[in-house]
Length: 148
Image (cartoon, rainbow, N blue to C red; front, side, top):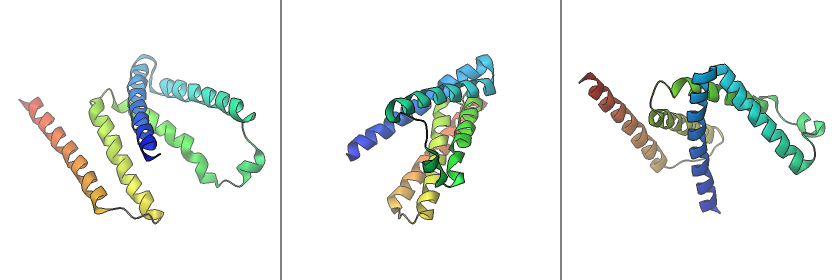
């Protein structure tokens, strides 16, 4: 089962990167916020169809009443991610965008795990540092090439 989750995570990473690239191209054509609206609008329509097909309804008020309000902020966060990638991808190579997003995800993952009392190994910290330092070295080398 762990392998399946690993494969699903890799697939999610591929989809996020492809989505970022496509949204950036769409943003060039119709504008950042229209592209974000289209992205989220299509996603909302598909999620609605899936929810209706799998559960027969969209929500139950009794189920929503017990959910803390801050948990509904995911839509705002998603919008920020979409707008951010639409703005970033045309300005920096997709590999840097992807690695930078990964570094940010890794960093917030540490914070969330720590906050939730989940222990992490020194190996995870070392791995994070290696990826982050590799990103910085690559950016530095690319900057030096541009100066030549």
